[in-house]
Length: 273
Image (cartoon, rainbow, N blue to C red; front, side):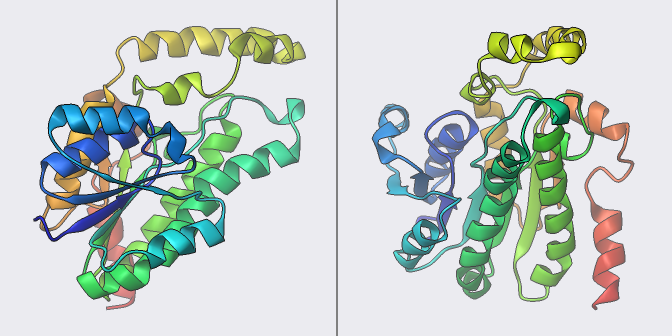
């Protein structure tokens, strides 16, 4: 597999960092991207400890020029892992529409920008796109309106794209973690300040945060999710939808009966066969 290349976005911490290291350990040539490469210290240390190397490059998913420059530097690409994202906590009355647009820009349009740029290379290699979404892309959650909207959009876009991409040999998968113990959660914002600004929504927000603290007490590790992402990368015929834990399957199962996406893919794929 040493000749196969995977590009992973958002690798400075969390799932992205763990996936970059795990993929390199599995024999992939890993192009590990992040907006600010000065934040690559933790990744490089983890790679060194694991006895592997990764190719760190700058890529800002919200900047088409940055994406184009990064992809232009690749001779080939066999897989793309869309992992970069940003959390957001808030409710509509208490935030601006610009706040919502910013969440969509990173979590939705950023995914589309990178995927669009990668598809010509992936058609040549008959490769695959693996996008890290969330159970929040299946079940809407209180005070996560903008974040869930972005993840719902990613899920719908990829589910619609998958049968089209399959006609040119590119496989599409979404990977849906539940709670993951990573820096992603701490990056959502200063919680106390959010509560202070919640006004009439403060009691509901306080209750929600109490609930989520219990959920995250039993969170998956980034390494566990990374291991499953590497399995998707290696699978001969990867499932469209992969839920990464029993808790995630149970939660999404409230809404999804078709857990691996096979029924929907068979239906929509038949429309263009």
